[in-house]
Image (cartoon, rainbow, N blue to C red):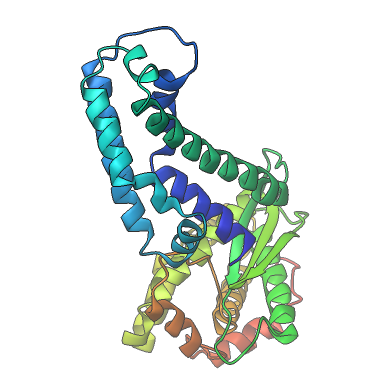
Length: 328
């Protein structure tokens, strides 16, 4: 499991188990020496609802590989001990105020042990997020952006081959250059902010905010289209690319404004198609996440080293014009 997969799985666990609202309620009832305050009926109902939603969230998280591993290793199932749950719900129902809980020798340990376990999970998630995720990303300036791209691990490889990594770095650099030109940020710099390995490979790519957002949109839209391309004809593929990507519209706007010529615009479009096609051919995509289906991974594997558009001439034309940044 990658570091980022771990921290994000922890975050999902904390959210699905309703840990923050449960801790907030329980702290009101378990603070030693606290004031004796009335427990409103709506708070009693809220606690019961949160506890049952937490249990339902736990069952849901058990179906996902990453979250299941963490839940099992940390023995989170102990949160839902039936005997403790029954004691808490029964005592809460019969307690008009907080001292009825804190003064009850049987009920108080049940409430207190639950809030202690919840706080431990909450603090673990916060610590991992700050040290393992936020530290990787660093502090971004308002003009900067960062996105993630994943390289899947093929079944017949162990890790990521140097060749694939070399192609990835070169292709992303070229794609960033093309997008920077379209958006009028020719001097924008790209940085490979972090590399996170484990099950696959995740790379953080940093650059100017507008260019990075355009790259993220492009790869997201490309993935959404290409996942259905095994069923489409060549003509439909080309039509879908030409009409369905936001970058094509942005390119047309740049031509209409006169910032680039139609000839250069066409060349940039061909280059962009070539770069995203290359990325798909080496198993690079936007992070597919915990809910990645076997079919999605299989599709990336099937497209390994292939030309999705089947347009060798377009790629050749783009290659011939690769060094042309003169404006035409």
